[in-house]
Image (cartoon, helix red, strand yellow):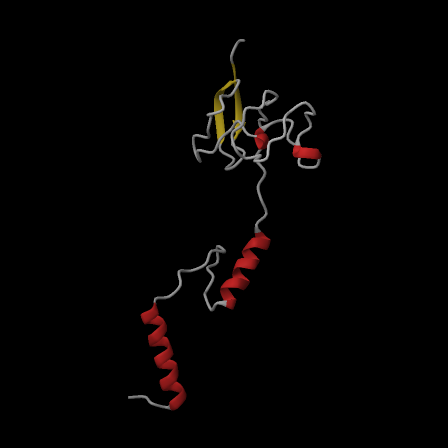
Length: 135
């Protein structure tokens, strides 16, 4: 069986991968993020809207679609990357941070929780303000 090459995107990070030799080894991975490439998500037959998320009816069931497998029906999809909309997750994290009195940063990540000493100093300042003790 003669080898050929393909240019494709990583299914996880979207990095352009050049001249990958086909057929893929089970151990082929992205040069950028190091995820496995011989995975269901990176296959032309992958379709989350069908049974078992695979259009190839002869393929064995694979539970972890993002883990390397031994599927004999794997055909590399040159454009498997799908940018995920994580706005709902960011909103949920912001609400959770607010619930616990933490600040969120503009990029959607939480700031580090303050140290116990900083919390104690803040509480002491608030107590002094409440009771008018301004020494």
